[in-house]
Image (tube, rainbow, N blue to C red; front, side, top):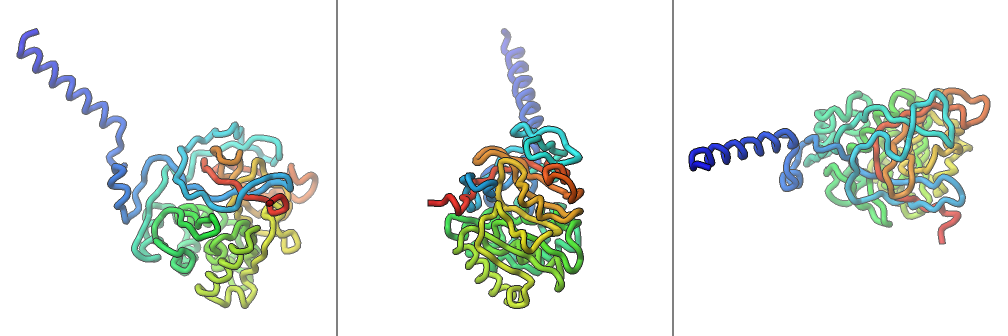
Length: 331
């Protein structure tokens, strides 16, 4: 091959390689080095922060702390979660719609106000009601360090507080089911107490949030954090805490307008569905422990007939949650 033709050939190959690289690397996705230094909300690749799991039955062995490692790829049909159903079935599949979050966001800020603003700018928070709840619930009261980083943070007792964008998403999904005043909400796996506080500010003065966790120390931690934030939440009875198995719920205070489960069940937990009002909504991760699971929206559509046929489901996104130990089987 002549020297001139060889040079042309090399230039052509270099140009082809550049086009190929640009086709598969988004200009909006920073390098891993850049990601570590971000202080504003930036959409990354389709990954989601992990949270916690819930024991489904007395023989289930799951564990209550949040996962502190990172994230999993969005896979809408993960674990054979099948077609969307009009009615619930404990043994059936759950379909997923297109994810409402197509990436793991980093919306970190230097203050709580900046963190919330970045969540709003990312469209993770859309409703004024959720904005107000998050603005008035300073994560600094609930996180021992790096409170305004958009990632899970350790809170002790092998547990973490979930990333802000996951809390924001849960509040947005539950918001339509929660009355402006007088709502009743159950927070399963109360952990740091942060989400219970934010929910309390959403249900209004006439509402109550019931928070439970099977780890007594976490219930006490929640109580301490809530007192630092606003002691009247507990003294007025707007937030009530209890040490209990999450899979059982808190039936004597139901039915609930909304239930948040910071835990993954292998199938829809019927005990919790039974504690929803008609028109009530639950958010719960569903799937095998330590594998890809689906964050599922459960809407109670009737309160007659079998509980397993009383609800509709919608898959929201893939997540990975660690197990929560049922206290009745803890050794």
